[in-house]
Image 1 (cartoon, rainbow, N blue to C red):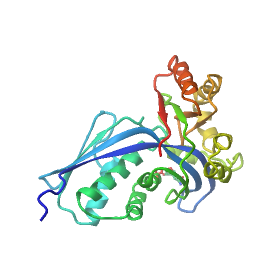
Image 2 (image 1 turned 30 degrees about the vertical axis):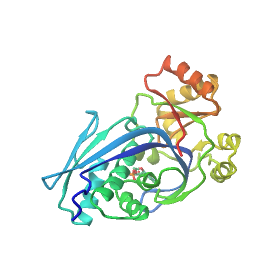
Image 3 (image 1 turned 45 degrees about the horizontal axis):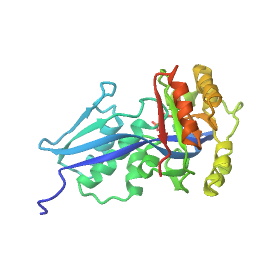
Length: 289
Ligand code: C5P
């Protein structure tokens, strides 16, 4: 036996934004058939996992805002993996939370994905990313993408991942309005009569061609109108972002987080400083490779 086997791992769990989010139709299983372009940003949680003597999964977190039981995606992911491979080694998982919760940034999904990657290493399972993504899909629709990260064209319920080129380097300013949003309720209120579909293939072409202007002109999210109808402040934040000089602004996922892109750092700083004046939660980060 290798005496130097790892006793703990520390895994980075980056947030994602949707550059494009399109819903094609509602499926018989109740989920929506989606076409999305997602990319990771430099705003990350940290998942620290260590082996413990007792055969159980113990969750701890840096915030009191998270459930630390089977309602947590991290717990569900660990439990699935543990059961599937009949692991009797217990773990303590510490979630260092930096990504806003219930925000449209896949915070819970990226934590679950990082947990799967971390346990794969700690328990020596040697599973491929594809296998981990398959397990992750049982936890949530965004988990498979979060297993891979980077920039990807994501289809199906969220489980078909095709990685594409990194987006042209830019800066992302995000605002998390106070309201939390339920993804199920936003999808439930989506009406196919009123949909304005984003140009997802145009977005992919622009990214492949490394055209920042093309990428900015193709930003779109079908869920935006649904969430804006409930939280009009999203529209006001978008307007402010544009007034402060952003190149384009959009809601991420089912919201309510709004992000904008800026090619130049000085411009992003201006937008960030302007928004700081009247929004509590504002972030300025890099796009991530
Ligand atoms: O898969 P996940 O639990 O993250 O999804 C949350 C909710 O979002 C689902 O219960 C469903 O209502 C909605 N959803 C959907 N179509 C998808 C993904 C999610 O309708 N492709």
